[in-house]
Image 1 (tube, rainbow, N blue to C red):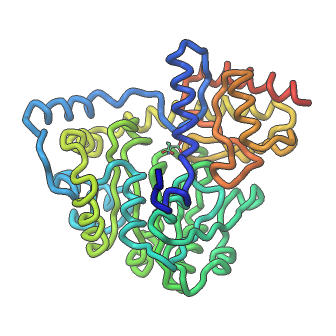
Image 2: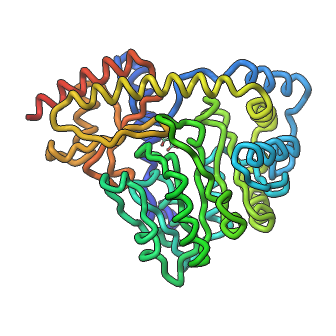
Image 3: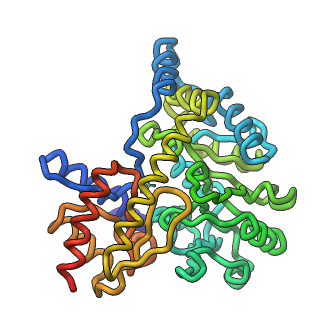
Length: 388
Ligand code: GLU
């Protein structure tokens, strides 16, 4: 069958493909230790589930406004004001089918042929593909472990051309787990304002910080940068709501209206009763978020210790999200060869760094149980030792 040319320009999502493979192997009774998709292993907190159940019982089962339930849009605006010092109103918010969909809507509304989008690498697998789907050009800026995989203001300045529309900033970062310090965010903000570009700040991991790391939302730096900022986020990671598919975008009204028009012709509203669960997530106690963060912190310590004990592997200690980005270059295998062999020989699933433009790395998600971490890292140790 002849498919549209755009399909040929993109590749399947490796994070989803490997996660699906690991889950299928588990269903077949294989004892897999999966460090693949960034999916918390906790159940969604009870009060959030109950709110969705109540909404179902109350008949919140019908079409709603394409841009989202007014109550949820208002609750998100309130959260952004209180947590992030960003002055948004409900009209500045669109509720989307997960954080991923918020970014897709943004690219469709903002980016067209000839537009360049700067993406610091290593990057989350879907950013460049979304830019390409929108007809734009991803401009990849490589970073290294020396700068903790963060783009410097000088690198950003160098990458900007008259065609640049947008910078994608993701802190805490997927896949590296690095967090830009407030000073680093301010320095990036200065370039954004001086060069008159826009920035989308993907803040889906903002609640998952360790070792005293601080999250500064770039839009809070100054009024000038606020006007050039778009926030993308969602409920999946902080509230363990991956399957609910509720995310959002916050931006100037004109842009939100454009994304709502696109959504009106593509998905319509996000599942109505799921949105009531999201309202409960924001309005209820935040203790559940802190409990999960503390568990992730313990797991991070455990996995770091185990990785450090494996000769030949190195990694920078992450201070956010729930990923460790491990350098495998000493093994002389591509990241795909490494991950394929690790899965087939040891039943351990990891994401090859090639998905994130870093073929000498693999990504391990530690949003999994301590038992999986211990057993999986034992297997990873045997795997690496067998290669030397
Ligand atoms: N964002 C998560 C990850 O990177 C979930 C999978 C996906 O959407 O890519 O693993």
